[in-house]
Image 1 (cartoon, rainbow, N blue to C red):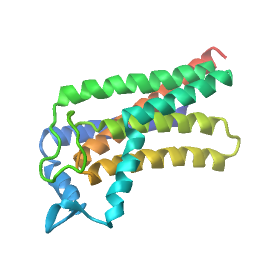
Image 2 (image 1 turned 30 degrees about the horizontal axis):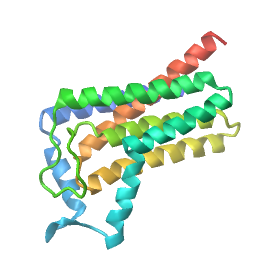
Image 3 (image 1 turned 90 degrees about the vertical axis):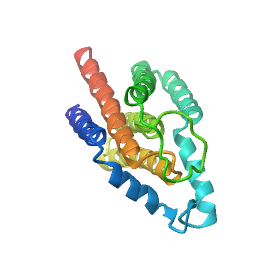
Image 4 (image 1 turned 135 degrees about the horizontal axis):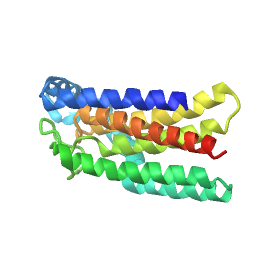
Amino acid sequence: MLAAIFLAAASALSFGLLVSEMVEGETRAFDKTVLLAFRDPANLAEPIGPDWLASAVRDVTSLGSTTMLTLIVMASAGYLLLDGKRASTVLLLISVIGGSVLSKVMKIAFGRERPDIVPHLMTETSLSFPSGHAMNSAILYLTLGALLARAQNGRRQQAYMFGVAALVAVVVGLSRVYLGVHWPTDVLAGWSVGAAWAMGCMAAAIWFERRNG
């Protein structure tokens, strides 16, 4: 529980600092530099890397899409219910659904437009900050990673479960920048608030479990 509280607090602090810098316009140069680093300087419509990479990145980014996340949540919740883990099912649903609502509210509150300095490699119409893909994938995969880690006895197995979950969330976020549909700070913010939300929910669940255990 202490680890979850620490991670939640650190992530929330990172998000707060990032928002402060973004609102003051201090992140513009960083955002521009990173976005341009993923493009051919002679033709900004062309991403760096071999021809197959853009297609592969689009496949990866789908791991953070609403459709894919919904399917994973439904499958995971069904398994947890069949396994008799009602508390874990409730935690998963509250974490994911609550995080999705929070993401939409924050997008409206900040009202940041999507990048306009490079052509987008896929169509997106919603607002930009924070990245919904980065935030929601961090929430779902970190929550699942934490649940799986708690079911393991060895520390190496626990670290592996949580590490894989974090890696998936990171790769999804990076794909959004590569495709040019998010500023890098959108993704950093999504990771930060997503991790804070997921770990906060996990800490609350552990506290409730011990209190009523």
